[in-house]
Image (cartoon, rainbow, N blue to C red; front, side, top):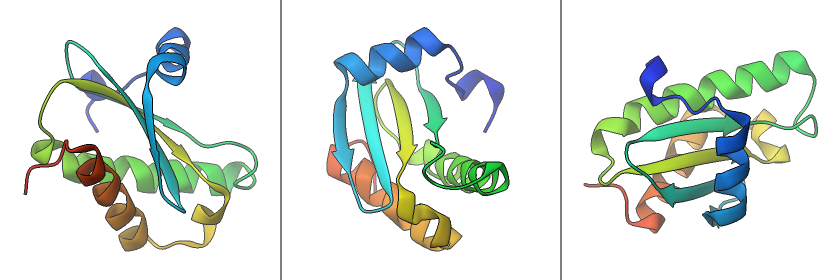
Length: 110
C-alpha cells in the first residue's frame, strides 16, 4: 500500500474508533468514517500473538487491502482491526473476509 493511503496518526485512529461505524467478521473488524480522501490503518493487538505473528498478520492485511483499493468507492478513512483467530487463517481467508466487510458496508464495487 502506498504511503499516501496509510493512516498513521494516533489521533486519527482515536477519531475513527470514537466516531466511526463498525462492521465485524470472525477474523476482522472494519471501522470507517467519511473523510476527504481514502486512507487505511491497520491495528493488530497483542492478543493475536507475538511480534512475528502480529507483523505477519499486518503484512497480509495490508496486501489484501491493497488489492481491494481500486474497487472501493467513496472517500472514507478505515481502520482494520484483527481478531484473535486471524493468526491461523491463510491469506485467501483474510482477503475474502475483508472483501465481505467492504461489501457489507456498501463501499465495494463489483
